[in-house]
View (cartoon, rainbow, N blue to C red):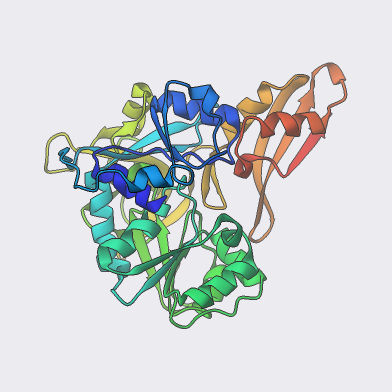
Length: 412
């Protein structure tokens, strides 16, 4: 799939990752919203009869046909403003939204990552992230532009701490990026660490206990921060000892972090404000959502160039005296679980479509440190009994696995 993604980019196209584990209804929305006409896939992963007017290229059964294809370089010109990919993230209205990222934004990000954290021709990066999660862009492309080696873990291996422990050793990995949930899975499986490994951790807040565990097991730890709308990571922080403060660090190259009040005025260091991100990494906006794009992508009044925009993250942060930024919380109902952004309103909207419910509220609970889970609280119509199995089946048909509540609790 990495080769296929590179081919699409080189030919001037843009790709939309589709996870076959997603519910059929969600996949259909993404396909129709993005108006996809070509599918690069493998046999049995998608119902072709649903998209009779589309063209399918199957990397397994079409192998011989692909091998006979023209191997000359594509002549179609590709500019920095060409769309590179569209990643769908959770949406508060009940439907996912497609974030559009250009070649310029992706290239700027990769060039910055090449300098810091930095890779060399002697490095091996172990890739554990599904292509439908935007941070996979670092794992797949950064080694290639640095002349390094990339080893791609299978879905089964990436989700099993013992198998992943073995692969870290067998592959000789010197760099691995993962969410806090994956790093915890490794540690709980008995992983003793690798003194040559650079650990990149992002997707949700890094706790002090996890940072301590990783610092004791790796050569260096990087805390990564950034929304999909600003191209993977927007800031990074290097931790070398357990006395280092955990912050989201400083902006990457050609990126600006603005901490603003409600009137869009910069706040003083130490004062909390909403984080806006400007620079080359800011995406084009949301596909087919002009009103939401206008709401979240505003004119950047601090930029030197006309037409520059900044992204309203919804994250509350404060600048510290050393110039780094510290994450404080959210200004809305968006949460992070296993690295995935989740709008609680999307889960609540799916529950609202179920029969027999008068009200539903979903919360992210953390009853024990590091043990985060989604819990749905539901109220039946007219006091009728609630069929929890029906609700779970209903949600299975509408939401990806990472958005499913771990518990559904009936309230009187």
